[in-house]
Length: 609
Image 1 (spheres, rainbow, N blue to C red):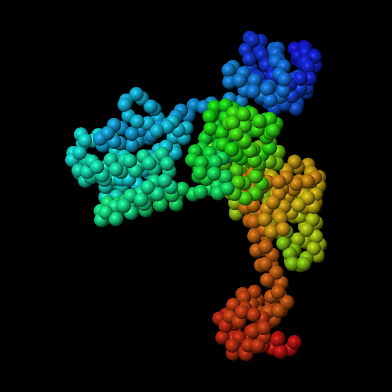
Image 2: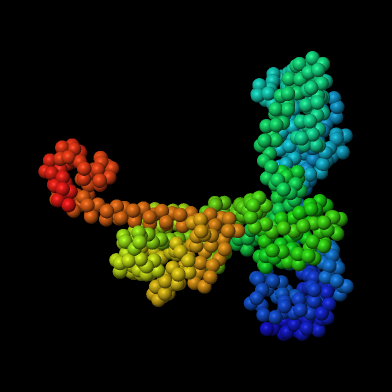
């Protein structure tokens, strides 16, 4: 420990055990980090103790600290409020800072007559009316496009009345998606009525628009204005189609935000899905550098996020635990003025929303890092889950299959870059013993596989290549049986088991001393499930093939002149051994591939028994 660190540690030990805010500064006097503490002495002292417990980012920050200051507060909540205020004011280098650089979006309505509706990124002082602002550009653009199609409004850049009857109708007119004012196909009154309806749809949503249209349709019908009633009916049908496509994904909670965090290659992606009236109305994501304790990370990014937002929903759904949850709730409730609930669902609809949010976060992060495939995402997530130094490019998986200890076999499948490599699949017949012992079977198979590596390692292909990861179909018992074989030969290949639940579905990963739950790691879970199903299928298919031969060996294959091919033809023709026994010589001889001599042999074989 250098002299500066020793001095800082000494100063930290003299701090009071009071709540407050600490301010880290570099040698130039610049503020590089601001934090809060329940007990200043304990929290600040942690920075200047053993550096092995810190993340790389924290070590880097501590290495730049020249001195620190502190402010004592009356409570931890007061410290939190002060911390937020100071971070917003100074924007320290090492604090999490979600950059709100997305801008705002608006719906523009041009001047009457012949008003035009469009989605815009700016709000210039041009005399037009604007609805907004909105933070989600996609939702604004999509809503305007839907309104234009439903109410048959032009989406082009023509100006009316200047361009009326200036051209022929475009394709949208023939698709019933535009009323073609450019070709004089609609009156001003009809057009303005459609604009009013579109604005009602954009301001109030589909429910209020449909209700209003129904009333207008019924009134038009009563007044015998049948063309107008038909036009309104068509709009109602179009609105209903749009509402069907807008899947309601949150039945129970109509207004909420869902948070999930994905991390990879030193980067973190925060994904937020925002729900209004049970429908997904907006999504946002932020990429930043800060991999640390996840509960602490969630707490900080939530504070950062809502420091930039006025709207705070009554429910915030998270993908895991959050540090100081009571304090965070108090801060959110004070900012909102009403109760706020932090939830961490484990099952059901809400858990599905969290999984959807996490999957989107992972994909956004992969897009940012330039690694856009699902397989790479899953391998990255799996490596983090298992504590591997890098994603496993070459995975071997093993499973044992038998019937009460007979016809004992094993299957080996290979996944390269997250995809099955069928040319590298291998089958093993258990030779070291008879009877049922899955642990001994696994040990024998891995021993033989490593023997083959020693013989073929010069080639670097097939058995001449060592895997980055070994996955066994089974739990701790299988892992404990295989580890001595692998380690005893001096190899450092990670070995894990794939555990199934009582419904025969993948539920966890076993190591030598316990189990790792993977249900909340969506991509890794999918990949491990696929590997487990594939190796099980491959091992069982080999066992059935071998077991089928064993059954034939005890019957048809024991008959003179009956080999495997003729035995298979007889079973295809008669379906069962019992039917073969009852068949006459002529019936047996009539089977393709059989001779009369072989038919007599079969006939007499079963009559002697």
